[in-house]
Structures are given as C-alpha cells and as structure tokens.
Amino acid sequence: MRKVCRSLIMHALRLPIGRSGQDLVLSEKVLADFEELRQNTSAKPEAGGQLFGSLSSSEIVIEKITGPRPSDNRGRFHYEPDRRVEQREIREMHKRDLHYVGDWHTHPEPVPFPSKRDLTSINECARQSTHGLNGFILIVVGTAPFPQGLHVSLHTGNEQLVLKGHNGL
Image 1 (cartoon, rainbow, N blue to C red):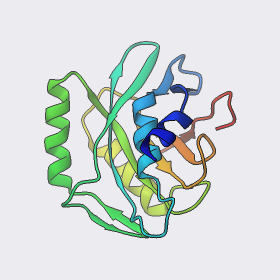
Image 2: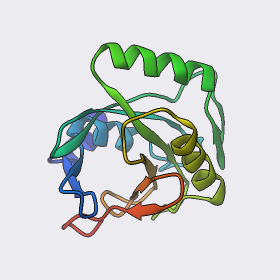
Image 3: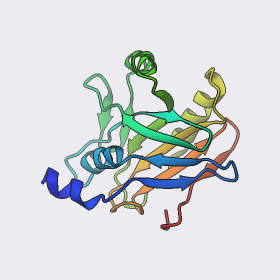
Image 4: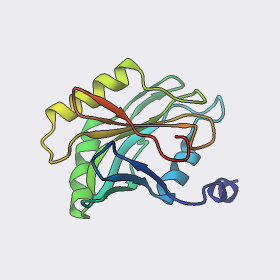
C-alpha cells in the first residue's frame, strides 16, 4: 500500500506566501509522509510534529517533518507533543542546516480547519520564540486527498495568512 500512496503524489506543492515574493514548498517526501500519517481510518490517532526547512530569499522548502513520537499524548481527537523532545529536535536539525519553520498535525475531517487551540498554540509560539522569520507555518492534514485535505497557514503571532496555490489549495 505504501507504494500506491507515494505514487499518488507526483511532485512538490508550491504555495505563494502573500505578497512577500517567497514561496512555501512542501517537498515530495513531506507530502508522502503526510499521506502515510493522515487519519484515513477510525483506528488512527491524531499525529503531529514539527516542520523543518531550508530558507532562501525566494522560497522556504519544507524538507523534513518530525513526529509523531512515542512520548506524545495522542488520541482520535487530540494531539499534545512532547515539548522537551521538540526542543532537542530543533537543536539537532539546526546542526543539519534545517530551520524550524512551524508545526503540523492531523485532524479526522476531510477538509481540515485549525481549532482555536491550534491557533492559540502556533501564535504563542511565534510570539515567544526568538527567530528571524516573519512567522511560523501551521499545516493541518485532513482525510481528503491532497491538496483539498491540507490547511496551510502562516502565523505572525497576531495575524493568520492562509496560503493558497494555483491548484486550488
């Protein structure tokens, strides 16, 4: 089944980031990982983790995701990450020249929308973190096929920008 899922994703997903002149790029590998972890059966609990990428003046390429971890608190309708492990992941990825750019998790709904708790969490993270980014990315992975089954947004701590591509996301 894994080969079938990976073959459904033909290429990376590119989304313009407002009027910044930058694009957010979700690599083919990251999309395949999301496909594998989405809650497409009632037996799958929510999953989540962090987004890591490379930065340039024209794009942010999300190349790696972390999670879920054995120490995360997971259920069908909730996900709470192990924050201590997340800090360790940030340090380890930084050594590989990959920067923390945000968080992701799944929802058991076809077209996902972040909950109030999701928005509060990512906005607090953006406000309280020391970073050189304009904000952090939040990705919620739903049960519908991609791109409809993805919510992608940028959060500055005070504002949200939902990212949309030319393909209808």
